[in-house]
Amino acid sequence: MNIKELWNKRPSWVNKYSITLLAFFIYIGFIDDSSLWKRFELYRKQKRVNDDIQFYEDRITTTQQNISDLSKNDSTLERYAREQYLMHATDEEVFIIEEPE
Image (cartoon, one colour):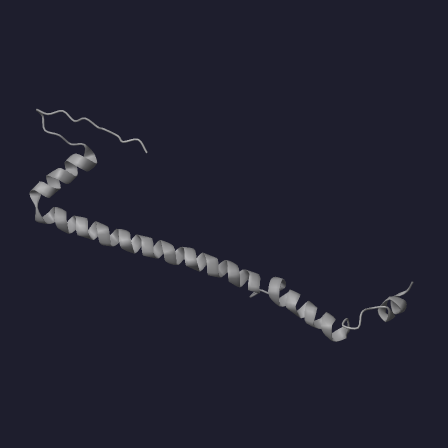
């Protein structure tokens, strides 16, 4: 069987236009520098970066609130130092109790 016989036995919807259209969609979808696949990957990366930005903005807001609270009141500063850095006075003992998760 040669190519002419195979071409004559093809289904009616297979012609030069449908083959060209299929090749175009494959090129646009996967091969091109701005392909749909790369656009999808860039969209996912942008979403992760935006989520990170939101997380760090929330973290900055919380930290700024803590700084303002600590700078206003000395008792708050002492409580924070005791809780976070396990500081204690010379005449007292510190016991760390960890709760199971």
